Amino acid sequence: MSDIAYRQTSDSVPPLTATGSAYLEMVRRKRMYGGLLLVVFVALMASGFSLAEHRNAGGFLNGLPNVFAFPSEVLAEGWEKRANLPGLIWEHVPSLIETINIAAVSTLLGALMAMSLSLLATRGLARWPRAIPLFRRTMDGLRAIPEIVIALVLIYILGGGPIPAVIAISLHTGGALGKLFSEVAENADLKPIEGLASVGATWGQRMWLGVIPQVAPNWMSYGLLRFEINVRASAILGFVGEGGIGHDLKLAMQWGQGRYDKVVAIFLLLFLTIVLIDRLSGYFRNRLVKGH
Image 1 (spheres, rainbow, N blue to C red):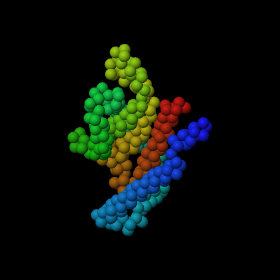
Image 2 (image 1 turned 90 degrees about the vertical axis):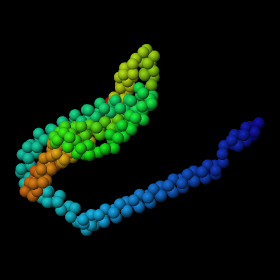
Image 3 (image 1 turned 180 degrees about the horizontal axis):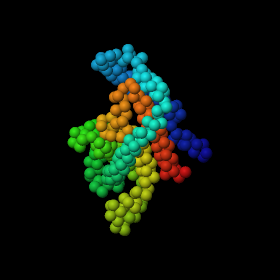
């Protein structure tokens, strides 16, 4: 009897050799696909480099030794006038505050937009399920257009200043955070929402009381991370006339030799600020997500 039971059990298990062969075949197939992707990637890189080399005014390889010429000139002048750096750093603190204000307002407006879009685009939570593709494509469109492109268009409409920068960064932030917020909301527990629906709660009440408490820590974490990115984005937009410390950096670089100490001071101020924001936001993200 025991022999029969053992024989039946062993017959139901596939032979080890067949399993091993299938595994090896899968490994070979993955390696083949990986090799093909690597070949395609190298071919695209080589063709792109060749095209850029032919269209450039000068050759990339010939000009490569000059890559560090300008930075070394800036650093040499900054070191020579290092006694002026503390005063120059303090001089540009108001511009830095303007840049941080642009980033903070943009992050807040973009996060509010992302909250609405993400809840309307999440399966199982959307108020209008048939409109989910519309809201998803809206987030894709906002995410696809770079901030600098939106800002350049708005300059012609609204003129220079911080307002175009706030609008441009807010729109891009809404699309980027909306995608992340939606992925977090998809993992929310539906039982509280079903309980609220059974007592007659509206869609807004179900979202506010059943979903937001679950996703708030992760949403806050993503919002803080996006604030770091927006500080850098607002500084970059200063180069196209949007104000803030980026505009001061552009003017200092245009003045050229003799003013490079101001360039070094602005770079130092911006670097220290980004490091400080990164440390603070990382601390608060850990507190929100991990509780310590």
